[in-house]
Amino acid sequence: MRRPARHTLLRAVLALSLVLNLCFIGGAVWTRMQAPTPHPGIAARFRKIEAGLALDPQQRQAFDRYTAAVESRARAMRRQITPLIGDAWTAMAKLGATPDDAMRVFDRVGAERHAFESDLTAATLAFFAHLSPEQRQKFVELVQRHTAARRR
Image (cartoon, rainbow, N blue to C red; front, top):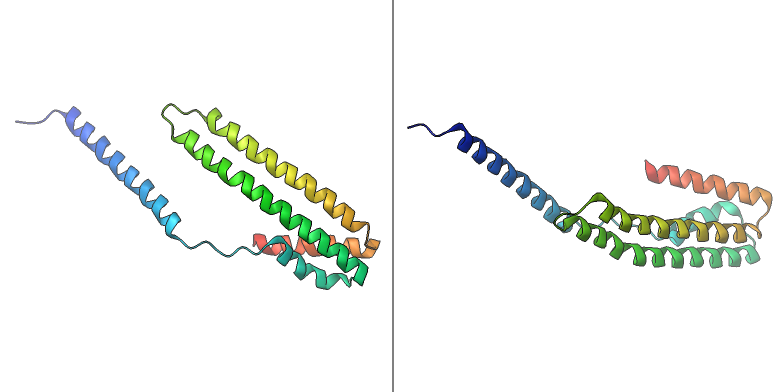
């Protein structure tokens, strides 16, 4: 006696669903088990740039204040957005979740990153007040070069 095609199709769909779920769970476990790549702090990255600026002692003090402020603000941003990203994942995991549920949380993440960029801009301009026009240009050039190298 032959089974109806409906049961065969149902079994195939269930088997495919099982395989996809196992792959998803395996991927999640694998990413959690991987050691995080070392991420140098913002101040450490700026120290590489400092050498190219030929700062005098007063400018060096301003630079130290600048990098400390930027690093502190970056840490604060990470402390604020890390739980928000977890909240977004929790919102997506809920039964009946909609894209809007997660996007509301990601909008808060974006707002925090935007606030960080605003603070970074203000701190950079305050630091630039201690530099000559040539040093400002050199700073921007070195930051852009460093950023391009990190993207590669």
